[in-house]
Amino acid sequence: MKALIWGVFGLLALCWTGLAAASVEITEWLLGMAGSGQVTDVATAAGQWPVPAWLALWVDPAWVTTMQGAWLGLVQWLGQVLPSSSGLMDWVTPLVWTAWALGMVCLLVPAVALHWFAGKLRTPGSVQRTG
Image (cartoon, rainbow, N blue to C red; front, side):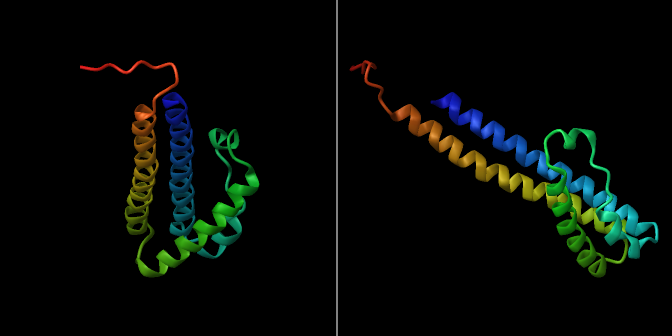
């Protein structure tokens, strides 16, 4: 039972980490486009972002397009708030990894609780020691 708990945790953690890494990479690409003076072309270029080989193995390209659109909106909004794209990336990357860390805590707490609870359950064939 404990192996199943940690296996599911590992799978979810891997997916969560991949999402964070892909988000940072997409954001860096979009900010590079915006920083090069192609701000008007960023919206059309968002759909043309080349999916990295490691990401194409795990994620449907249609889902990547949806994520690109969401990050494009965030980058455009933050671009209005912060004056330069380099300053923007200094904010976005730590923000993404902070959200990743909070998500990992949200995955880890139930996994630890389930591990503890699974240890407290007695199986029908177990012998309880006294003394």
